[in-house]
Image (cartoon, rainbow, N blue to C red):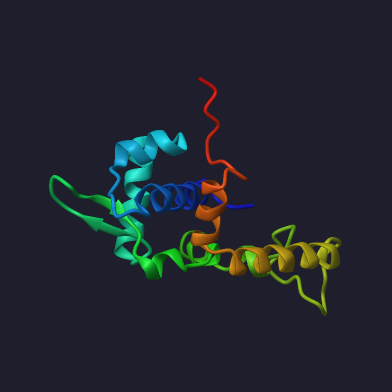
Amino acid sequence: MLSKTCEYAIRAVIYIAQQTKDGNRVGIKDVAKGIDSPEYFIAKILQEMVRKNLLQSTKGPNGGFHLDEKDMKNSLAVIVRHFDGDKIFSGCALGLKRCSEKNPCPLHQQFKEIRNTLKHLLETTTINQLVEKLDSQEVFLKLNLE
């Protein structure tokens, strides 16, 4: 349902938030390794997130990516809307352009419920909440099978 770019963006911001919550910075190589993504691809995504103020970047020997307090309070919906737009929150399950309450597609009613549940989940889940779950080891971003 989410684009690959959006998936990587969410994974990256959660990873960066967890790694930098104590004031550290993290580089592109570490992010790519930490979320198991191609380095060149994640570099472009992170640059875009910095341009849109979803993520902070510091240059220099102690530089790298990090999130400030405001960024930590962002919901996942902010990232989804930036990379994938609103279509996931309002689009038709079959991709029809004129699907509506008045002219529903065959999946309209069922998909509307799913779409609304997903919208609620993404709008009410913050980056900070996910970092807390990672810290308590309730969830994971990458299984370490070594």
